[in-house]
Image (tube, rainbow, N blue to C red):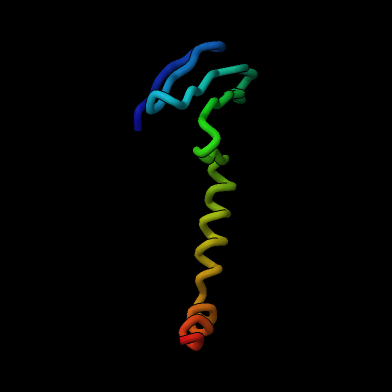
Length: 71
């Protein structure tokens, strides 16, 4: 993992087209802004993990059996 220090108002650029800016720092909370192209999804990690779990659950054995029965 790359670790960088940034102050309020400073940014970093990822892959030439994603900019992450530190907007505010209050105690142990940091507010960041992310500017990315619309085709690049940006999720909070807990939401991303929920999506992954939901996708995994949708591919259950019963669903695969029903798909096999179509052929």
